[in-house]
Image (cartoon, rainbow, N blue to C red; front, side, top):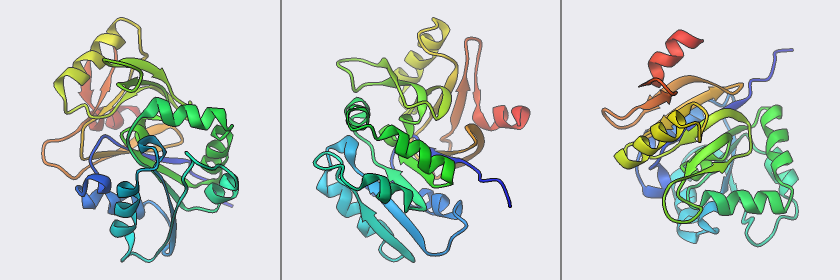
Length: 230
């Protein structure tokens, strides 16, 4: 029996909720071995925004897949069965701190970890990419960009939207000053595949957009980092 690969796909920004980066959605689907996918969407970080939910169904309606979403802001009953019965979970963007607070308040984090260990592909954009890490550089806890604890499926720190100069600069400064551990920054339109908690592939739907590994001494393309650290 082959060992289960634990997969997370983190997207820096954009995606179907912005009606962009269609090829990134296809990239996520390509990582499942199944042909008839069960895809679940969690719009929690946007407070179950109906527009984002509608865009989810619009984007995937022509793909051979079983689509569903779960509004965790109003009800958590049955969530364990729902999440464990999926092939792919996609978590939308929004307020990262608000989403993690709901997960903690309702003791949901263990269900994500169980799904992850079972081989369910966990994916998401912005807040939905950041949540899996130990630490996040986030704008969801008051004014400015501040460190926020994630749920610890991937070690180190993370920032989405690193296409924005002020965000990547703050990320580099906080790492240099030991406010954050070394980590990964992903630009909009870019997805990073993590297998068993390690970055293994970078996919970009936008020209000249990339992801980076940042520590106290350097910022390098994540593609280069992967090449020398696999």
